[in-house]
Length: 220
Ligand SMILES: [Zn+2]
Image: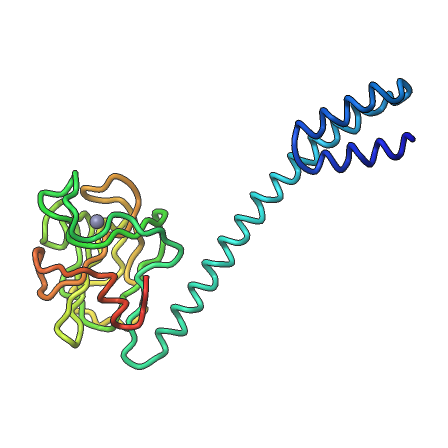
């Protein structure tokens, strides 16, 4: 009898407090000799905590695995001739292009990629660095440390709020080359990469960047 009840409690323990208390009720009704039942419930709670810790660990491992897969996909994509790649990995899409932002004087001129400060930022396509520096490289203080790259099709890309700039004006960069680290410099409410695709070198010529990247075979 005792082992049967133990099993019941163990089964109930798999799920919910309600089930566990049902098990306890059975114990009272059935056999006053089950003195170690509370110990079983105690170990059940411990088991649930362990399961939660394991779930958190698994989620972290899954996120790391997903990021590793994204890094590999980006590197593979970069090998293709004339490739365009994502500027960062392991991001969440933030504020999109074109909406009136609370901290922007005009409509949001790029796409935000939410990533921790210090995330590697890559040139989405080969080209020449035409701006690199604080104050948006000349575009204004809202951008913080920023880089603008001119590409061979006449398109420009911009990378803003960087914590570190790792290229200089005039430098040729390859597709997927690391150009800096993300941050939260300038007018930014938290760590993210602000990314623009422009038809000219300067602020005000931005076009919607995710559609642009998608049209160039790199969906974000
Ligand atoms: Zn932005």
